[in-house]
Amino acid sequence: MKLSTQLPYSDDPVAGAARIVELEKVGLDVVWVAEAYSFDAVSLMGYLAARTERIEIGSGILPIYSRTPTLTAMTAAGLDALSGGRAILGLGTSGPQVIEGFHGVPFDKPIGRTREVIEICRAVWRRERIEHEGIYTIPVPEGRGTGLGKPLKLINHPRRPDIPIWIAALGDKNVEMTAELAEGWLPHAVVPERMQQAFGEPLAAGLAKRSPELGPLQMTGGGFLAIEEEMWEPARQAARAMFALYVGGMGARGKNFYNTVMQRQGWPDAARLVQDLYLDGRKEEAAAALPDEFIDRSTLIGPPSFVKERIAALHEVGVTHLQVNPITNDAPKILAQVREWLP
Image (tube, rainbow, N blue to C red; front, side, top):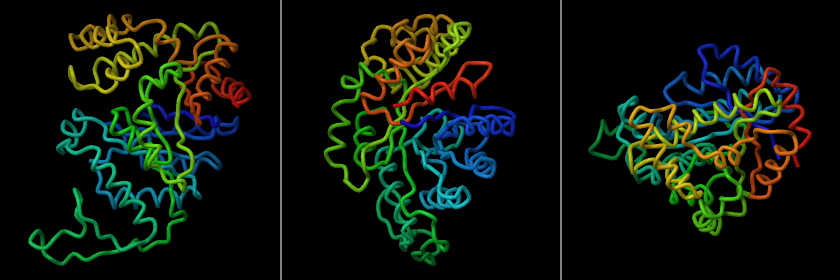
């Protein structure tokens, strides 16, 4: 099991990178860099590549709509070269609020687009001349554009032709496609005891079509981490605020995958209540409405014995990367401790 964390959103990414450097020294294996509508992830990943020596550096995630597939492939190849083969290409659709509201691009055909982006990226890394027909047509077909486009291949030789691709997926079709095609899966709010009822069918369907060359599907799981007793309540409050935002505010009523997953995990009434409260502007009430059981099972907050039990439960359901968001005044000390508990 590997240990991973996320570079937090910050106005001072240099300071954030310095913290990651310290965590690398105590055993951090992977850092994920988000890109919502903040600073772009690629710049920060390049900076981390220069500041670190060993850890893998993943985009968590690059939205598929904001770059062409070939640019995504070029970017991943460049990051992999800069980092000495430590890049992970984390992809996802983001959501209509960000894609249409910030990027000004229609949010359409998310599964088909993701599948084609994966296919095109791997073709670029194999240095094939890119000819693709589908949602993305490369080169631009006759009758559209100047007619001067021709198939090209990447000039550089990538350090690796098989840069790992991880997908952030929650919906059934997306989870199935991820299990079929990607090296790794970035889920949200993993509750080990409810994995089968929430994701069992699409995972099984995708794994049945998976190529053996991809190896076993890797996945993250974990959450807010607090071992010191004085940090338990601040960590729970932080978890409540974050889950209220995602379950309540990420999308509209009837179109929020985070809410749907919580319902499938066994808390349908609470999920609907949290969404109603959040969308009515009652954010603190929404956070308070999250069941204690949900918070306990989707985080790593409690004494060492409890945290060890949660790590074991995550490992049992296939989590390969323990994803932690430490709430502490001494993150290197806490991560070093947790590193010793990993199977």
